[in-house]
Image (cartoon, rainbow, N blue to C red; front, side, top):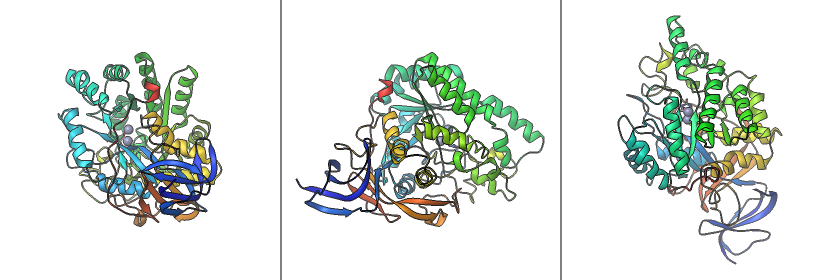
Length: 466
Ligand code: URP
Ligand code: ZN
Ligand code: ZN
């Protein structure tokens, strides 16, 4: 047999274990996993490296409308370049209609923005903010049918938050047409109440963003979202879970036999609300929702990562420039934390942080790392078995890792469009040194290479929704 490419001698992380073998690739597909493969146009010596499934980051925000005068720092070009440089081969950003725009039109325009720009494959989740009869009765069913098989609903943010009744209506469409619902679980009324009180007391700096979104706000909404999903009879994914109490809600729901899945992110094992408490507005760099908690929550999140409460480890990459009035330094942001755009960058640093803190520190196995960063994303969002695992028949989406490479995370090494990283100076061991998308190298030794070959992925219904 002859191959386009053979990757030789890596420690390969497959669903059935970790084994040193060669990977034979033809036409962008893994065709052989075996020993002493020969006869290829291109051979990659990967001895001493680990071959992991290319990362799938199923929670990123790219070129998303963010309110008047506010601009996201990444478009598809920079966002997917950053993703590829961080060992990713697929990302799933969110398509949000702007103002009164229809969902269908928003998807068309978002497709246009992505076309020909991407260094990873991409596929869109739909954000549902309007529940009129055209959106829910016509556009959403047609889009799910066309392969947009996941959607996100918000329980917070003015203009996005849906009522419980609206969430049930969306869930009912998802049930009928077999799509995965993702929920942002924070109680909007409670947040508004706390924020208005804080501002009345002169508490205006970024720290109060965290203080007015305390754990009960998230725990209550998590419980409510799960109850709504139970009533609607659908599986549910709770995204960006930040703390132990919300994790307990998820575990209790599973104990009752519900299909509830959960995602957490690097910020909830490595940042705290104290990071928002800095004098010179630097705290704005860490403003995201849910906010980072205390370091006492980290072991609770780790327990969930280690023991299976979490299915997904995503970045929630949501980049705004720190030094720009279109970003964190928006008009009024220095005098009122409510005006600071929510979100932090992290698509390039997600995998190294989990590898270093999880695998290198002995908390999780390589197989669990692969599940949390690729396989489960593919399974829950309808991309498996084409994506998410190193196995015969799958796309040859592979990241080669040097498990010994020690590095301090630095903004100057990253490729995202924003001007800072929340992890400046964070020490990691293990870094991806080559990213391979459908058999072609997209990153080598920390720099992007080649043309933007990423394509759009239309998805099937996730197995758990069938
Ligand atoms: O603060 C965050 N996480 N911004 C991104 C939007 C979201 O809720 O995921
Ligand atoms: Zn969210
Ligand atoms: Zn998000």
